[in-house]
Structure formats: C-alpha cells, structure tokens
Image (cartoon, rainbow, N blue to C red; front, side, top):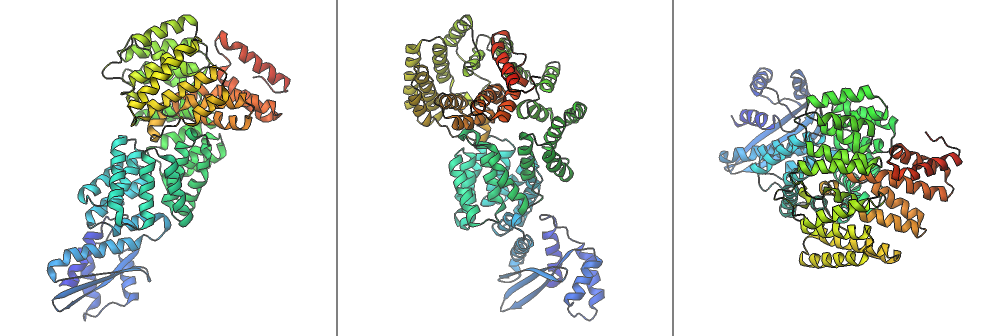
Length: 637
C-alpha cells in the first residue's frame, strides 16, 4: 500500500513545481495493475513505453524498503531511457512518510535542473524544507526569466512567508523587487536577510548574495568586484554574469565609464541561457542606445516573439518604431500602451532614452489635455524638453506651473536651472531666484521624495550657485563652508558631503584653480541604488561630472574629457536630456581640434538636432556650429 501511496503522493507533490505537470495518478495505477498482472516490476523499457502512452516526457521509478521499524524510499527520474537523478530518504516508520516524500521531491526537482542557467532553481530545491515554498520559488524563477517582475516578486514573497529561512527566496525577492522598482528600503532589507540566512550556503552562492546586497545598496564597486570574482572562478555562472551586466548598465555612467561595457556580460548570459528575458531586454536596449537598428530588430524581435506580453514589451516596440522613423508605428504602440496603462514606458523611451524630441512633445502636450495624467511629471518633462532645445525662458514658465502644481507657489523650482552653466540666466531672474530661495520653506509633503530630508542643504547649495552666477565669490565661499559644517553633523547622509564638495569645486574653478577643483572632485562621490540615481542629478553627481569634463578639456586632456562628457550624456532622465546636446558640442570641439572630422561632424550634428531653434541669446553658438560644418564640407541641415 505504501508503494501505491507513493505514486499518489509524488504526483501530488511534483505537480506544478517549476514547469512540471504530472499525469493522473489514479489512471496510472489502473494502467499499472493491468500491465503488471502478476505483480512483477516493470522493466526500464516497459516503464518508458508506459510513460509514452500517457504523453509524459519523463517518469519516476521507485522503491519502498521496510526493515527494523524504519523505512527507506528511493526514486529515480528518467527522461526516456536516460537516468537524470536519483533521490533517497530514510525515516523512523510511516509517521515520517510525508517528510520523506518532501525530501524526495526536492532532490528530484534539483536533479531536473541541469543546465548552467538553471543552477539557482536546483539550489533552491535543495535549500528549503518546504515543497510548497519551493513551488512558489520556482514559479518566481519562471516569471523572472520571462521578465514578469511583479509576478515574480509576489511568488518569491510567498515562498519567504511559507519558509522564512529560505535564503535564496529572499535573494530573488530582492532582485525582483529591485527590477520592479519597489521601495529601496524593502529591497535592501530582503537582500540583507538573504545574506544573514545564507551563511551555510556554498561559497559561490554566498558571494552572489553579498554581491546583490552591495548592488541594491548602491555599492557598485564592491558589487562589480564580487560578481567578477564569481565569473572568473565559475565562468558558466549565468547569475553572476547577469548581475555584472546590471551593475555596469546602471552604474557605469556615474563612474565615468561607458554603459555599453554591459553588452558582453549580457551576451554571455544569453550564451548560457538563451531564453533569459531580462538579459535579452538589456542586450536590445544597449543596441537601441547605440542607434543600431538592425540589432534592435533582431534582438527586440526575439524578445517580442518569446515574451510578447512582458511588461517591458512596449519599450522594445518603441525602440523599433523610433529607429525605423515610423511615426504611425509609434502611434500604434502608444495606443496599445494606453489600453494597458503603460504610456509611461512609451514616454520614457521616446523622450529620455532615444530623445525623439518632436514625438516626445506630441506625447507630453497630449497628456496635458488628459485629466487623469500626472500633471506635475508632465510639466517637469516639458521644462526638460525646453531646456534640451536651448529655450530656458520657456522652461522657466513650465517650472513656474510645476511649482503651482506642487502647492508651493513661491518655491524655487527654477533653481534647477543653476545646474546648467551653459544656459544664461538674466541678472533680473537671478535676483528674483535668490530672493525666492532665501525665503523658501518646503511644504510638509515635498514632491521630491529623494530629497525630502535635504531641503535646508539644497537651499544653501542653490544660494551658493546663485552667488557664483553673480560673481559674488565671497558669498559662495560662506555657503560652501556652511554646507561642509552641515555635512559633518550628518555623517550618515553622504548627499550633504556631495553638495559641499561640488559647490567648493565650482568655486575653485571660478577662481581659476583648475587643478584644485579637480582634486576636490576626486573626493566627490555618492553611492546610491540605481533608482535613486535615476531621479536625482545630485545623487548621480551629474553637475560634478560635467564640471570635471569641462576642467579636463580646459587642461588639454581631451580624451579624458570625452569620457566624462559621455558619462553625463548617458545619465538617466531629466538631466541627460538637458545636458546631452551640450556634451555633443564639447565632444565635437575636441574631435575637431584633433582632426577627427567624421566624429566631429557627427557630434556637431547631434547638437544642432536639438538646439537649432534655441532662443536668441543662444543662437550665436548655433551659427558658429553651422559655419564650422560648412568649413568641414558637411551639410548643415
């Protein structure tokens, strides 16, 4: 009766674990009784043939041995006639059968996952005491690999609730939550929990857990070092290659390194695990950022074919439409996204990633007419669009509207303009801005959540920048000194250190001490999670990186300057949209001076694409570029 019972128990326990689906155990027992007749065992060939009649790709053969009051269960998983894995469990009699079956199931499932890309699924099966927790864990793995991060996060969370000591479930919960853009504190907590619970895991897994903990906490250098340590020792470890790609893709810009360094790790993941949706998405994204239409059609086409309903699918379709210059196709994607409430993805790619400014404006102005649209975000992005086109006067009007939308009508939203030294601010506007910043007290519910606790420090920083713009270096010096004092009082809040160092570097540069300013910037570094970097030019250190590039250019270190200009251009979101054209102009000048005509022409063209209709105060720069393009024998249009 235990032999027959094992058929039922194993079928029930294995069904739905990962991608496994079992046949009806009662129908199987009926077929067995007819086939066995005299009660003899089935041969391997007979067992394989019986499985085939049920349409099963794999089958389990097992045994029950009772001796001395103890039970020993054994089970072997076959794929056709090929033996995949064997599992055994032993216990003190029938009272432990259920625990023994659970142990068999976990071992059989672990043996089922044999490729390098499935290693974490195998490890997960071996490191939980609960088949039900394993069921949710494997469902989470399947959803994660398909790019469904919301579903994967929910599944991993259920696994941790069923088995709170399941270290790998906490690990994957942190990874999925990070991609799903959940609360960074919750993600960091899950990663730390994984590290605490994973002390008994093998060294490879402990390193992976530590690397993710470093990554979600913003310690990019440490995360990169740990991931590279794993890839060097275990070159078939897809998880480490993927983690390395994530670090390089999301943190290289702030470290002055090209984002496309991430291409190799993601390609390596796809060699090991061709159906890894996040890696395939990232590979297509890197191609899109390079404006490589053929690669985006190929990689994006694969992604859409395998994962057409993924939450990232609209972004892939937008890359394809924009790179094909197909406005009708883009409109169809926008219409589909509106039905699925994913317009934000179209908006993001169009305006910030591929910077198709005319289509982006069309989308934003349409959003202004939509009552349910997030008005504050639209106003902010319209200001960014105006600045990207060299139209700071128009940007100021949008920022004034934004201030009203925030319920802070007298606030200094226009202080954001101070971070763009290449954009002129009239003296009258500077005086008004200084008065507004001096009098400003942020509302209790300030919209800028990344800086909810930094209002006093930002106020000092902006006042210092106003003083620099007005040539009042003594006042700027006092502000920088005061900021440094506030930083000493808040050692656990590195953004204050950044503000103090960045302002001091700007001051030194204005005084002509270029080497001193560079030295100051060398200690200006903030570690933060990728999501925080994406939504704060201060955490991303964008102003400091632009200043570094400018200083290097002035010191004749053109190649280094190009690297930092590119890093500013590759920063995410608002500031990269605004800084981008200027970084192209400066890179063009460096290439031009070095007689690299083709590169100079390309960067000059990118600048003109954005600034051609700049306001009158900036038109002399536009005419200078047009004239230089003519001298280089390149078209000006």
